[in-house]
Image (tube, rainbow, N blue to C red; front, side, top):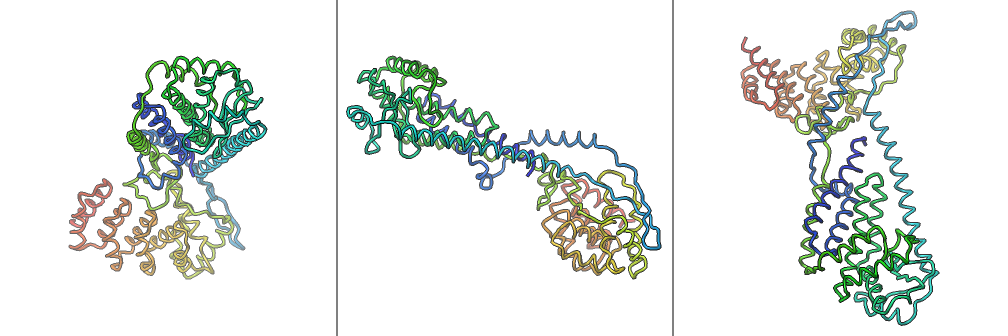
Length: 548
């Protein structure tokens, strides 16, 4: 997990989906509110489950963010501190004094990035969980309100039952604890009326009941809960909160349109909404766990929509087509992603530098954690110099005093690792055994070390690594084989000429140049038009060398 990836998941993707929802509903502004409501519900659900949809959707990379990340990476490179001067320490190894460089602590920015990402993820999870629990608590509180409410008079229940079409009946109750008509319950809906419902005429009461019955038929309490759940999960994203508000607004508009289509006068119904809102006094108790008739925030928009234009009605097939089209336009935003160039954490999976930007991955991803003190290294140096592999160990002993030329120069770290493998004065066998380690970094270090002294005994172990999923290990194995010039690696290195990673292809060119011959020259000429500049330059140098 990286900080940029977390921001992309919580901000970029949901914002893209919600933005597409605004575009879709703007195009459908003349459609009925029920159609726009269905579109907004689909958009919010897509935003909510976008992390789950990511594996099933093709990736759409945002090049603008990639370019910005590359600029940031470039600035960081310029502002990084210079490599400090090498510090040496003299260590006593029994009766000998051996001078070795002090272990250099290499800061890995990916580790800091991951820590920040996990801290941010923990904060987001805790706040999101608290908001979800609060929303569930509001739902339970609304159910308790409904349980304390008394049954409505018979004639009120009769009117409500005559208005509902998709269920057998409706549970209508009156309560002194509510000031506005509302519907509560996710699956079993209950309609709550204030005790002063008698102040309304029968026609007004029928319009009120029809509005609330429409909420029940449309399952708006459940859909509003899903929208609120998305707002809780993406609590740090204001666009998701705006989308949840649009879901509620369009659901109320759809119910208003149902009332007007039933024959109610739009102006008289708008006046009724104002009367209900005044009676509510702006203090609705059960929000947000109920679909209330008099939400003051949306009331102005609802009244303007009723008066501005006549209510349109689309066929079911047309509405379904419109919603499907909206979903199809919103899904590409859920596929939005940021390439690995944006992230400071290295991608060490099977991604290729000249295909997915993995060439910008931090080289420090290859470092093997080594917890060996200076005295232990000095003892290993003494043992190996007195053993049978002393000549093989000399390059690594000298490399301990290597002065880094840049911050990603890890020759000294590799040499310390190699010497830490010394066992009973031997070096070759422990390095060959390192190929059995499951960590690709350990195998890469072993390949580098065996390539330094061109050990042909390692060729059978190196050849399979040329096709390893991690390109860094493939490149290291190909480099070691190029040093050995062993003909047994011919087929593997010929295949490496077509490797997706240009670093591997460059090492294959080095191997063919070292082997020489007409067949090798023919293969090199066939790659003069390689897609990477470094490979083309290596091929030209190799051909110039063979010609002279």
